[in-house]
Image (cartoon, rainbow, N blue to C red; front, top):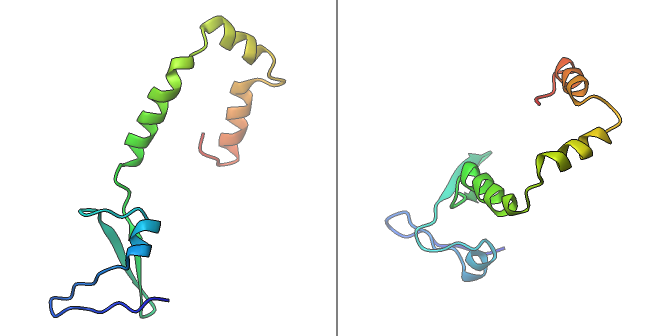
Length: 95
């Protein structure tokens, strides 16, 4: 456990080991939550979830399969995907 001093302006400095472990850099933000008289700090991601998903899709779209390949793969699935999606929706699962 580390002791962190609060300055007259209410500022704190996180120990270098913590900043490195969390990959915190100047300008990054932390979410603060007060829970039962305990202060919790959580790094805010630098990129939104949407940006991460878009990056992932762009990275993996280079190896796209053509329509014939996709149809061949789906033909091997042992059940109707439409029926399965319908079942999941009836169970209240988000599809």
